[in-house]
Length: 447
Image 1 (tube, one colour):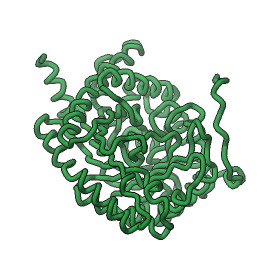
Image 2 (tube, one colour):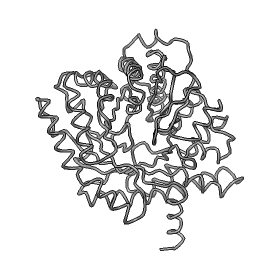
Image 3 (cartoon, helix red, strand yellow):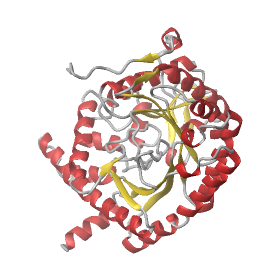
């Protein structure tokens, strides 16, 4: 092996914040279904603790052997609304507490899959799960939830969006961090290893290992070497850098799958920031040539970045999947926080950026008195962008009780801090209260 390749990898880890952001074990719970909710909860606990008992030890062993940090070890499970389809609302907390207890037993960081897929309609289990969200996300510690409210094939469930706006508002009044564990999707994917939106899809195998790589710092450092050069050189540099990052992800994922006697799933190519300086997607965009993220040209730069990441990564891995692109969470990205505080980055610009990035309005703090119908309307806008454009979009909003525009909320750790952003104060209630279903768009007349 060329010694320079080894030196590059060492520099990526030691100086540029490169890490394997997560090894995520997906576990099917379809064989845990039982009409008795107590027995089903016991089945869930037993399967997670059996299949996942060596996950943390194997990940730590790979870290020691290869010197590549693996920041998070996580589990996703089959959407619980499917597993608990026969239960009543009062029983739902049993499923969540079984997940929480099992996750703590095996020592992981988060468990995802307290989820429902309601893009076309509700089953009784779906409604029970959604109505239980405030209790579940405030009474458990590491359970994450997601609700899919729209798809390009099915359209948008406006009744679900109305309900989710009410739940987000309600949780914001109870606990300021509960909403950080809830993602509302359109076109959700089944192999997403990132939280809070990860779940194990019904088409997946029994036990699967998915890997999410990070690396904004590595990309920024590479772009520093091509300052002033044409934009196609920028795209090529991102592609080449992402190829290197992804090869490490492929190696780590394959090793983990072999040692855990599981199927290797995908590498998620997403550039995932942290609140640390030098590990910011916003700083990458600024390195491309923006004075500050949010300036005119931000959406174009983000499109280039997202596309180049995918093109570079797809050659480096047997299977890519998940969300794959660039994440733009506000609270988890130092450069995004700076831009919001400076007034350069608005909610309107963030929404425009979500038309070309991996996810959507992510970890955005809003005033605590924002009406539920306004929250629903923000979810509807993001779902519309995803459904119309055949891409995944999502919303993770953080109503901050007692806080107003300009105040800052500290969430700690990877969640960072979020300046409360201005929300348009005109009502969308009549639109949201119509309810019903927005039909799927026609795609043969695309322009």
